Length: 110
Length: 114
Image (tube, rainbow over all chains, first blue to last red; front, top):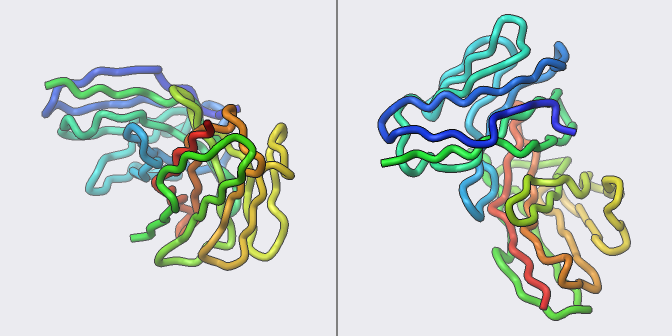
């Protein structure tokens, strides 16, 4: 079973920030939080990952709470092309496979 | 950046035939590759873990004699669906673990068995 829970769907207006929450209350000390997204009929695309510090890259920001039991993925200026299913995954280092939950279906509306 | 390719991107085959799907890491070596299956409107489900030079590890409920996996080199893993049936129609996705624990996914292969 997936170690994360996410809302099944969210809407966001084009140009606004999209904030996608994820709960991972059973995360252990050596497990990372990964975010991927899947656009229809394509393979999942890596977005960002982190251990305990907040992270930012050209795609998004990842905010992890101090107790590491939840995180938020922020797309600062959502576009129509950001419409996808977003998966939050918790996984340890090396070798371990990812367990996918149902994810959050983000719809960016014009 | 790290790229994983799959071939073919889609395939239609007749019931009872076998089909092979290739997964390649294009610019990095991967000692471990993973094979997932995704049915319509569902999430990805892990089928097996493919290790270079050794036998694959299959998830519970996945028939290893039906889904043959070969990982002959550090850049190539193959999945062969033997004696395919319509219920094997699905979207098959492979991934490879690259550097810094980032798993890189292929674009997927859509299999339709008629």
